[in-house]
Length: 141
Image 1 (cartoon, rainbow, N blue to C red):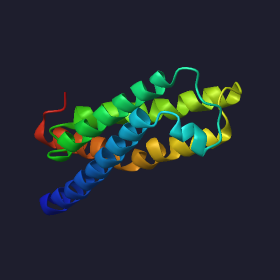
Image 2: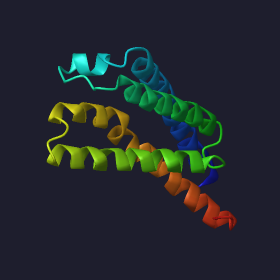
Image 3: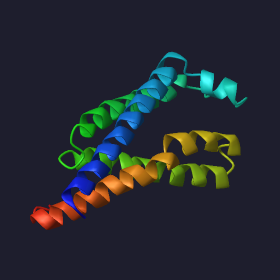
Image 4: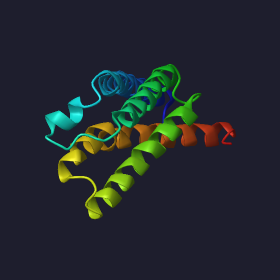
Protein backbone atom coordinates (compact mmCIF):
# COMPACT_ATOMS: atom_id res chain seq x y z
CA UNK A 1 0.00 0.00 0.00
CA UNK A 2 1.34 3.43 -0.88
CA UNK A 3 2.39 5.62 2.04
CA UNK A 4 -0.18 8.34 1.22
CA UNK A 5 -2.97 5.74 1.02
CA UNK A 6 -1.84 4.18 4.29
CA UNK A 7 -1.82 7.56 6.03
CA UNK A 8 -5.32 8.34 4.74
CA UNK A 9 -6.64 5.00 5.99
CA UNK A 10 -5.08 5.59 9.41
CA UNK A 11 -6.56 9.10 9.55
CA UNK A 12 -10.03 7.64 8.94
CA UNK A 13 -9.43 4.96 11.54
CA UNK A 14 -8.42 7.66 14.02
CA UNK A 15 -11.84 9.21 13.47
CA UNK A 16 -13.44 5.85 14.27
CA UNK A 17 -11.45 5.67 17.50
CA UNK A 18 -12.60 9.17 18.42
CA UNK A 19 -16.20 8.19 17.70
CA UNK A 20 -15.77 5.10 19.89
CA UNK A 21 -14.26 7.29 22.60
CA UNK A 22 -17.16 9.71 22.60
CA UNK A 23 -19.71 6.90 22.49
CA UNK A 24 -18.05 5.02 25.38
CA UNK A 25 -17.71 8.10 27.55
CA UNK A 26 -21.38 9.03 27.04
CA UNK A 27 -22.59 5.46 27.54
CA UNK A 28 -20.43 5.08 30.64
CA UNK A 29 -21.69 8.35 32.13
CA UNK A 30 -25.31 7.35 31.52
CA UNK A 31 -24.73 3.98 33.21
CA UNK A 32 -23.06 5.68 36.18
CA UNK A 33 -25.58 8.48 36.71
CA UNK A 34 -28.72 6.60 35.64
CA UNK A 35 -27.95 2.94 36.39
CA UNK A 36 -31.56 1.83 36.05
CA UNK A 37 -32.32 3.91 32.95
CA UNK A 38 -31.26 1.25 30.43
CA UNK A 39 -33.42 -1.37 32.11
CA UNK A 40 -36.44 0.94 32.34
CA UNK A 41 -36.09 1.99 28.67
CA UNK A 42 -36.07 -1.63 27.49
CA UNK A 43 -38.70 -2.66 30.05
CA UNK A 44 -36.31 -5.13 31.66
CA UNK A 45 -36.24 -6.18 35.28
CA UNK A 46 -33.91 -3.88 37.20
CA UNK A 47 -30.78 -5.51 38.57
CA UNK A 48 -30.66 -6.25 42.29
CA UNK A 49 -27.37 -4.37 42.61
CA UNK A 50 -27.32 -1.38 40.23
CA UNK A 51 -23.83 -0.58 41.54
CA UNK A 52 -22.53 -3.39 39.30
CA UNK A 53 -24.04 -1.61 36.29
CA UNK A 54 -22.40 1.62 37.46
CA UNK A 55 -19.08 -0.21 37.68
CA UNK A 56 -19.51 -1.44 34.11
CA UNK A 57 -20.25 2.16 33.13
CA UNK A 58 -17.01 3.27 34.75
CA UNK A 59 -15.05 0.61 32.85
CA UNK A 60 -16.69 1.54 29.53
CA UNK A 61 -16.02 5.24 30.15
CA UNK A 62 -12.36 4.58 30.95
CA UNK A 63 -12.04 2.60 27.72
CA UNK A 64 -13.37 5.71 26.00
CA UNK A 65 -10.46 7.73 27.36
CA UNK A 66 -8.07 5.08 26.09
CA UNK A 67 -9.61 5.18 22.61
CA UNK A 68 -9.27 8.96 22.54
CA UNK A 69 -5.56 8.71 23.37
CA UNK A 70 -5.07 5.87 20.88
CA UNK A 71 -6.66 7.99 18.14
CA UNK A 72 -3.64 10.29 18.22
CA UNK A 73 -1.49 7.50 16.77
CA UNK A 74 -3.36 4.22 16.22
CA UNK A 75 -0.21 2.33 15.23
CA UNK A 76 1.79 3.38 18.26
CA UNK A 77 -1.13 2.78 20.63
CA UNK A 78 -2.41 -0.42 19.02
CA UNK A 79 -2.48 -2.36 22.33
CA UNK A 80 -5.31 -0.11 23.58
CA UNK A 81 -7.32 -0.92 20.49
CA UNK A 82 -6.44 -4.62 20.77
CA UNK A 83 -7.68 -4.80 24.36
CA UNK A 84 -10.83 -2.93 23.34
CA UNK A 85 -11.40 -5.33 20.44
CA UNK A 86 -11.04 -8.32 22.75
CA UNK A 87 -13.70 -6.86 25.05
CA UNK A 88 -15.91 -6.21 22.05
CA UNK A 89 -15.54 -9.86 21.02
CA UNK A 90 -15.98 -11.41 24.48
CA UNK A 91 -19.00 -9.23 25.34
CA UNK A 92 -21.19 -10.74 22.60
CA UNK A 93 -19.95 -14.23 23.48
CA UNK A 94 -21.01 -13.67 27.08
CA UNK A 95 -24.34 -12.29 25.92
CA UNK A 96 -24.93 -15.33 23.69
CA UNK A 97 -24.26 -17.63 26.64
CA UNK A 98 -26.62 -15.69 28.89
CA UNK A 99 -29.27 -15.62 26.15
CA UNK A 100 -29.05 -19.39 25.64
CA UNK A 101 -29.38 -19.92 29.40
CA UNK A 102 -32.39 -17.61 29.53
CA UNK A 103 -30.65 -15.13 31.84
CA UNK A 104 -30.90 -12.13 29.50
CA UNK A 105 -33.70 -11.20 27.09
CA UNK A 106 -33.10 -10.77 23.37
CA UNK A 107 -33.68 -6.99 23.66
CA UNK A 108 -30.40 -6.74 25.59
CA UNK A 109 -28.77 -7.50 22.24
CA UNK A 110 -29.38 -3.88 21.22
CA UNK A 111 -26.69 -3.00 23.75
CA UNK A 112 -24.35 -5.55 22.16
CA UNK A 113 -24.89 -4.15 18.67
CA UNK A 114 -23.95 -0.60 19.63
CA UNK A 115 -21.35 -1.32 22.30
CA UNK A 116 -19.53 -4.07 20.46
CA UNK A 117 -20.48 -5.28 16.99
CA UNK A 118 -20.40 -1.98 15.10
CA UNK A 119 -16.81 -1.37 16.23
CA UNK A 120 -15.39 -4.72 15.04
CA UNK A 121 -14.51 -3.59 11.47
CA UNK A 122 -12.63 -0.42 12.44
CA UNK A 123 -10.85 -1.90 15.46
CA UNK A 124 -9.95 -5.02 13.48
CA UNK A 125 -8.64 -2.92 10.61
CA UNK A 126 -6.47 -0.88 13.00
CA UNK A 127 -4.87 -4.08 14.28
CA UNK A 128 -4.45 -5.44 10.74
CA UNK A 129 -2.89 -2.21 9.42
CA UNK A 130 -0.61 -2.03 12.45
CA UNK A 131 0.50 -5.59 11.79
CA UNK A 132 1.18 -4.82 8.11
CA UNK A 133 3.11 -1.66 8.99
CA UNK A 134 5.10 -3.39 11.71
CA UNK A 135 6.05 -6.33 9.48
CA UNK A 136 7.25 -3.84 6.86
CA UNK A 137 9.29 -2.03 9.54
CA UNK A 138 10.43 -5.28 11.14
CA UNK A 139 9.04 -4.27 14.50
CA UNK A 140 6.08 -6.58 15.23
CA UNK A 141 6.31 -7.64 18.87
